[in-house]
Amino acid sequence: MGEYILNVNGKDYKVKVNSIDNNVADIEINGKSYKVNFRQLGSIEQKGKKTSSTVSVQQPIMQEEKKKDGEVVKKVLAPLPGVVLNVLVKEGDNVKEGQDLLTMEAMKMENSIHSPYSGKVLKINVKKDDTIAEGDVLVEIGV
Image (cartoon, rainbow, N blue to C red; front, side, top):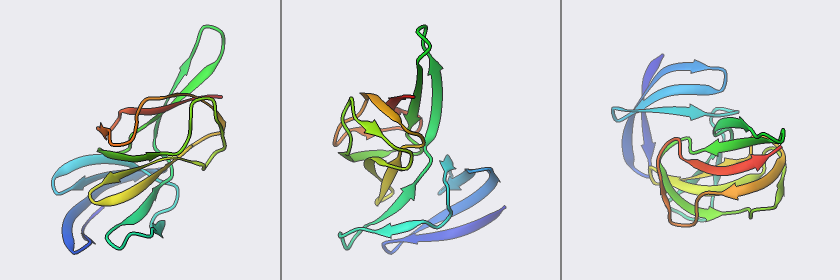
C-alpha cells in the first residue's frame, strides 16, 4: 500500500504498510513485520515527558475462550513487543470498553492499551517492567 519514513524523536523508521483489513494493518518497521490494531488512524496524545508521546493502541489483539460453566473469557494480547510501564487495573476490577488497562513502551513511544470490551478483570499476566513480546496475553477479562 505504501512505504513511509516515520520520524520519532529524531530517529527515522522505515515503515511499509502491506495491507489494512478492517482495523488491522499489516506493516513492516525497519524490515520486521507487525500486526497493528487500531480504531482511528493518527490518534496521538501528548504525555508530560518531553522525550515521548503516547500512541493510543485502542484495539489490541484479542482471543476468546469459553469455559465449561459458560463464562466467556476474552484475552487482551500485546499488539507489539515492548516493556510494561504501568498496570492501571487490578484483578477484580470492572472495566468499560475503551478504558486504559496498561501503558507500555515500544520503539521509544508510550502506548496506551485500552480494553476492547466491558467486563471484569479476571487475571493480569504482566507487571511493571516486564518485557513482553507481540501476542503475549496481557489481561484476561470475563464478559
